[in-house]
Amino acid sequence: MKMPLIAAAIAFALTGAASAACPDDAAVDAFFAARQAAEPAPLAIAAGAPLADGQCAQDMLVARLTESLGPVIGYKAGLTSPPAQKAFGVSEPVFGTLLKGMILESGATVRPAEAVRPLFEADMIVEIGDAAVNEATTPAEVLASIRGVRPFLELPALVVGPDTKLDGAAITAINVGAWKGVMGDLIALPEGDAGVAMLADFTARMTDAKTGETLSAAPGKAVLGHPLNAVIWVAKTLKAQGKALAPGDLVSVGTFGPLTPMKPGMSVRLTYEGLPGTPSLDASFE
Image (cartoon, rainbow, N blue to C red):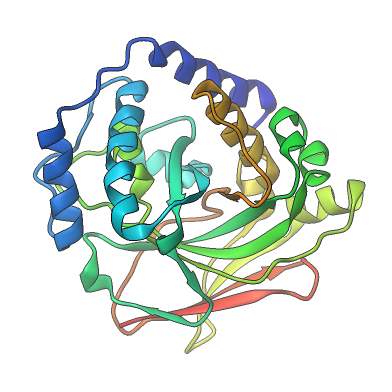
């Protein structure tokens, strides 16, 4: 995706912010209770509303989640690939929040029964190294302000039942489905053009860890034309909220391929082909 489209997405968010209407506490409480109990939520909060309404609902939900999942450690750009956007009928990314208790180590075992409509997807974490990233306008400028990247297998959960429609505002309201994620070790990247090209051209490959079968494969450029464009988008979205990225913050860039239903008995491996050391991580579902 070209930078003008990223700018247009930010402009849309700013336009909606002035007229945001927050849902009532009862609606958010009902959704939160359903999420905690792994039961389908009775309704999609903010469905059909402006995106700013969905963001207000997300803020209310995150405030409740921090009580059990701990502090905010980063942010996520959701629906950053054409397949993901098509699945939810949107043409731009959506914004979410990452909490400390959501992050698991490679080799983790996860129980799909603990969530409603759990999914898995090939993602990536960018670890911020310098606050200058907030002014970055190109992938090269972002690269100069990060510590590196980390493999990330995101495990979102949609919470609502299969017959409930989720649009951009509704998926924002549920914190873009953020539930869990398996994160690997920090990967140092070459500086300058070499590092920028490497992130655009590497392949994020998801395989069945038992059979070796490829479940999905996509290049880095599948996310907004370059995965570091997602960091630019997140920084600008945060700026519109009066916030900023800080050193140590984590940014989930979004999915490189399809969102796949999680099934008990599966074991998956995410490999970054073309990055230093061919890093990978594993997770099992029981």
